[in-house]
Image (cartoon, rainbow, N blue to C red; front, side):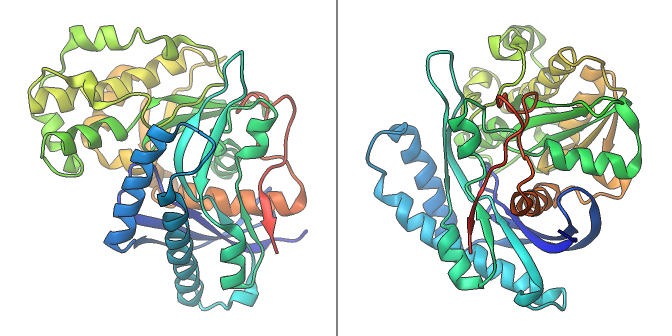
Length: 371
């Protein structure tokens, strides 16, 4: 298959109210051209539905019958994201007939990692068939279920795209890509092309939940609150003994596996500072698990905009910390670009998950195609 224009869509578990939508020209192996991208806001009523869906999903825990909010939220977000695709394609001066695929991740409402006694489960809201009918182009969706059915973690799926980005800048094995969304995940590639990826721990989710719980806003804007506080080093040391952090990869997290209660009893400023330091400290422990410790971390995702987290990463990992933009990448667009890339791979039957990224028993294709 020659390179196609593919649109990628992503909405993170931090529920920032935006749809990440990006155009990428790719054959699923090489990145040929970056197209435009946008962060398009959801109508507030849709974000409110998604907040409710996440809350009810935590009660649901994969019981037989879906909460009613799932269907309502799924239809609304599918339509809103379909409109976002149309708007971006028009902005690029293209027509929908120029688009070879849309990679539609959907909204994760619950993710339960596999355990020795059971396979894992995951749920993303997003109706690929409905989107295909609205757009008239192939839509690839439900990227994680096939991996989990084979015993994989279902996450992270970004490693193969991060590898394509690293190849473009030729940094070699001394660099790794760190994505800071609701959860943090790392992708590392050896000089021989061996690819390893896993969730390192929480990123923005605990701090955002902490701010909301204390009536301080939706997030710690520019890390100002954390930078004004003092890390509780004794508590941090205790938090860093969590069994997840020492567990071997592959491994994955739900955005609620680490919560704001980690800062219970601390002042607002000290709590925010300690949560930011924990995100960085967990990354430091993750680097110890890799075959070789990278010298440089290239950071994408919303967490790169938080100076408190970025400063803590430098202190607690010993690495050079770069923003995605330092290498010509678009830090807000990487996850959406990833699903554009994965959509092209899926159309070609190429694998999107691997034994050392999700724990799949072999390289696996994934994603359902509506066409």
